[in-house]
Image 1: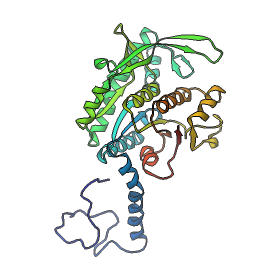
Image 2: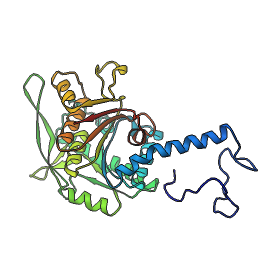
Image 3: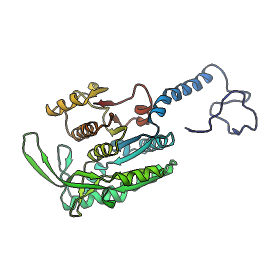
Image 4: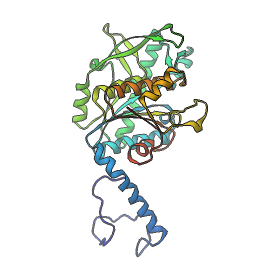
Length: 326
């Protein structure tokens, strides 16, 4: 989808700089009826996107990239195209990626069984080393290369680089009121936004692996949703978008038909207290609440299994996921 240089389709002359035949064209003209309608439909899509492009120009959008959208090649390509397009139309996307399934797969290959508590990975010394190896050494580089292949200018970072993400040990409170030590699992203590702002100002797309560094210099594994929420808050982002493997937030976690399109922070916080949310949705909702409390106007939880889900959520009237507002 070109972003500049589009010409009027009427009155085209030989030598106007468009010598390539278009799909569906035939000698003597573009045809009529259904042939014309498809171009009208395409124009309508662009017109629908115009107010959103105008509104979000120059604004920062934090995208948490994970789930099925990282696995399937066609979905991965669609997400990369969406992010690069966002940059080309004047937005400032910042990507925080997950990679939990890849970390779990590597752990199993090495004979270590993953353990989770409320969606958070229990991380001992060996697990921390594996997480760094996968997230920083492989996943981050693959995403950067994929964005660059689509014409973007991406730079890969981990929170460990230059003390970008400062971490403290996370002491997890369970639903029964007790506490669990998850090992080298961290909370975000601070973010050096200057590094990210410099990259954005130079035209780059920052791609961040969710590894933080403690005061003792030790690396900490931080949930990617948590990092995305804290980063959106610190940057004063216009939006936080979380890609997941479900249609959005469900009123009933076991019923796909119960997806809600719009919900307030107060309502979703109540659901969290009532235990109506399960597993990986818990840190996602906590990230939403943190970002909203810090002033981010809207947070979106969308289905990463839908091709071009980012564009559909940001640039269309209907959207496809759940929007959480203050």
